[in-house]
Amino acid sequence: MNNQKCRNRFHKARGRTRIIQCIYVVGFMDLFGVSMIIPLLSHHVKDLGASPTVAGIVGSTYGILQLFSSTIVGSWSDVVGRRYSLLTCLLLSALGYALLGMSTNIALFVLARIPVGLFKHSLSICRALLSDLVSQSERPLVMGHFNAASSVGFILGPVVGGYLTEHEGGFYTSSFTCAAIFIINAGLVWMLPWSETLVHCNDTNSSNNSSEHCHDNHCHKSAQNGSYANDNSEKSSGALQNHYAGLRWREVSLLQPAWRQLSSVGSKIHMVASSDMWDLFLVRLLMAIAIMLYYSNFSLAMEERFSLKPKMTGYLISYSSTLGALAGFLVGPVTQLYRNNMPALLLHSTVLTCLLIFLYAAAPSVWQVLLTSTFFAISTTIGRTCVTDLELQRGGVQASGTLIGAGQSVTAVGRVLAPLLSGLAQEFSPCGPPSLGVFLALSAVGLLLIRIPKWDRRGMTKAAKLRVAE
View 1 (cartoon, rainbow, N blue to C red):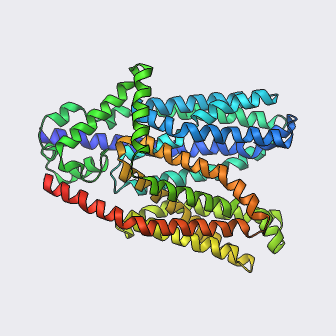
View 2 (view 1 turned 180 degrees about the horizontal axis):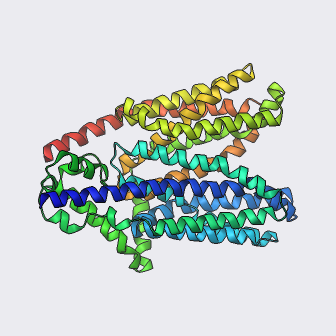
View 3 (view 1 turned 60 degrees about the horizontal axis):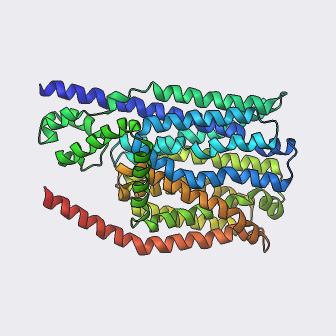
């Protein structure tokens, strides 16, 4: 009987592996489709007869909607389950891009951006789903691979979009192609083996100790690698039962009345807002603005400082973007090198990023800019993964959608502030934006130096309580 349970758990772990691989494909196709459209939006608005001011207002619509909807949609995915929320976001995003393909005036263009601004959170829900599927120690590796797959799509998409634009009606063709990609993604999500990822309550209730389900080391390892909880979850059958019962409830909670769903969403958002995670969100905000300031006037600064032609600047940006995509595969090995000490890794990556921004601002030649761009792409990729992982560690995977959504809202605030700060800094010097970025990154380093010892003390206290509970 134990062998049968071992085989069942092994097959469920294989099902979770297939879902993880499919989510990588969804992430790649998502940003591939979006990046086909992004470079063409400003040209299309101009072709529709919009003035620069109107084009700026229309362009900010998406960012403002994302700012307010990220946390809400992420929390909603915690309430109704990843499957239904992800399908809803993909289908409504497809509707938005289809409407974009039919936009022949400014009003239709704005209308098309509304569903995309409200529901284009498919990547955030994918990250929340991945955090549900893997253990805490595996999460940085899986998140790094997902970010790498998505970044590759973002690099390849503009190439296809630019090719389609050369033909008559190219923007409309690109928009409908993007809509079709989102529909294909929705079909892929619908066909995923979701039932294989769930451990039924009967399995967990049949024993007071989860280790009794299987005595074989290989089978126990396979079950752990596909579990939804953290590394300590197998030590407590009660925690497993509560967690899986909550998971099962979320899968059917879409049938609940709308008012109850809204109440649950509100309670989760309030839980995150009242938590002691302001330091992590502030670090995310400071580093997001610093990184955006680095890129804000990159092309103009290269031309003014080194007389570099736009074509060569484009090659340099493509080189940096490619390295950023490949750096996703380094997150897992680097995390293992640090023995999953994410606070230390975040501190070191932040210090490195700050140093690289300073070297870029003071670079005497293009070759030093090339050198800083090489390591900058790696440090920022690792830093983003560290921040997300720490948010999930401190907030708990039960609210992973809410936490990831809140992080995206904080980043959206940075997108609003960065252009304003960049414009003000450029009034003084072409090196003004990265110089301001150095100051903000230094502030983040100082904050981490103050707060990390407190995180360590909390971790030690929590570990002591777990040992007492055993």
